[in-house]
Length: 150
Image 1: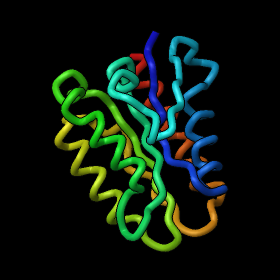
Image 2: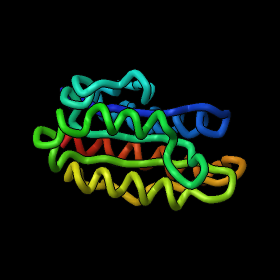
Image 3: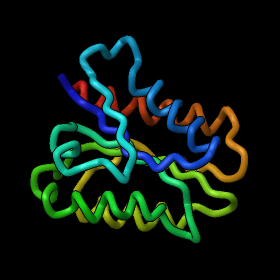
Image 4: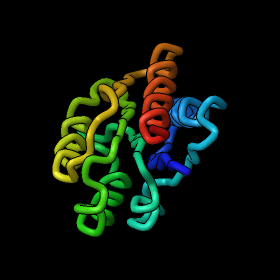
C-alpha cells in the first residue's frame, strides 16, 4: 500500500482548515490503496519519512520563514533520508498573515537538496482562509495521493 505522509505545524484555525482539506484530498475513496499518515512536525521522524512514498508539508509563515517546527523536522530527517527519498513526490501549503514567499523559498531550497519532485505549485494562503485556498489544498492532497498510488 502506498503512503502519503502529511507533516504539519498547525497552530491556528486557518492552518487547521488547510490541514483538513489536505487530508480529505489525500483520502479520496477512489484511491483505497493509499494510506495517509498525519504527523506534527515536532514529532515526525526519519522512520516516518522513510516509510512514506510522498510528502505533504504544511506550515505557517513566521517572520518571513517556515515555522521552527518544520525547520526542526528538516534538520532531523535531512541526512538520514537524503539518498533513500530522492525523487519522491511532495506538495506544500503555507499560511501567513500577509506574506509567505520567504517560507516557500526556504522550503523549496531544502526539498531541492533532498531531490524531491513537486506535484504542484505550493498553495499560498494569507489572511482568512477561504474556500478557494481549501480547494487548492484539497487538489494538492489528491494529486499527491494519485501520484503515489501510481
